[in-house]
Image 1 (cartoon, rainbow, N blue to C red):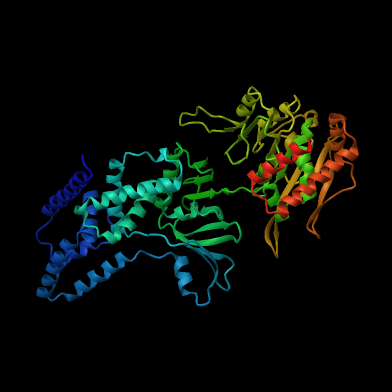
Image 2: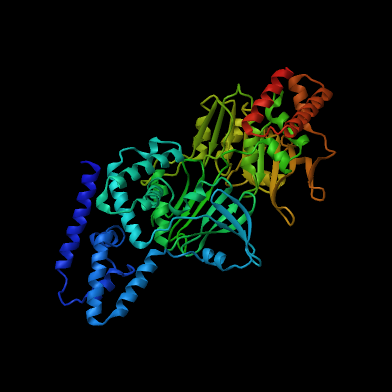
Length: 589
């Protein structure tokens, strides 16, 4: 059926339903009562046909609305009830202006607000006396009547647009295609009586409902945001900005169902379901962002949604040096450990608390892996973004609706051993996969890496050797280096991330596992310095390469200088850094 014919039939159907219901109404109802009813806020339940027709007549059918308004005015004048007209006009005006969020009202009231920065359509304000900054982005907020028209257009578009959104991988291209299709439907549907100046508004609202994330769509597309946190209805959406940290936004959900609808849309997109029997969702969006959602009964005060966004341009080791997370000397040493001078790469665990930068550091270290090697990464939720070609990504999966089909990290780690990997990288070691990973470390798979939640080298050993990981102490002999990273709140610089300790594991075969600190952070100077302890790994490199200690230390110095030169020349992208370090090794050999 042609588009305009389908829309015409849809509108005719709605009008027929409206006419049928009007015939069933009592004839004693006055014109004033009918006008009052037509401008109800929608607290009472109405049939879908009646609600849709009210919206079409109120917003789109201007001619019909004008005739009804004239008739109402005559009736009101005849009865001497001019007050009804005033009430109707007031309610109509209120319906045309969507309700503002509390943050928007607060920004408008503030007499001394200061604009900190602006980019695109985003503005960040500071209000004196308030602890958090305010993030403002204009968002199209349809009224209740407009939402009904949007639902009508969306219903038509769902049937008329034959292009599957999943066949267009680029989000911006997907939105552009759907916007064009919606505009075509509006132009070919004069029956809707929507003025041309409102086409863009309706197209934007429909597209973000169909292929976007509703009112948080501009937040998802802002690469300056690290975290998007919806904590419930009638509360501002909190954001963690990469530069300005925690702040409140002007975006607000007015009821719990709006949040649940968004969660369900995300769940359907990734083939999952959230309901009372399964009120938790932990998954990954198509763009790589990590999403966690909760609904009742898990969350008491309404549904919540947390989206952790990852940079489109991930940090490189040069970035970590520039940010002070690590020194060039330590970065040169870790490059030596990861690459192993082509002979004996080190097995490394990165420890730290939540959001301390473990995954970022792991990503940077993995960029030092030579191109000739086959890499398999295993993650609970895929987060790594490596500039490698021979790279296989494995991701865990929870059980399905019938309790079957679960893929644990342990199952994937065991399977990876049958895939002839040169290296295995486990995103986060937590349970049984620890035993399988350490089995790999002790059977010749050098250069393996992973992260674990622990705050010191000693705590890392305790965590790994006790339930639920339960790795036998004797198997710790396969672990060479433990890196500890912390998120620190500095009064002057805000939140900073620092590698605070690098240690080696020793004494395992003597049944007395110990950690020896070889690099440690000085909190006074905010630098990480080498300790007086001898570095055992350099002796291992001597044994496997046949080079002298002085030659290995000279190689370390050359790599340190090279990283400093890259930083000075402004070469910082992870792909650029990878290419430069590969070229350095090729020319050096």
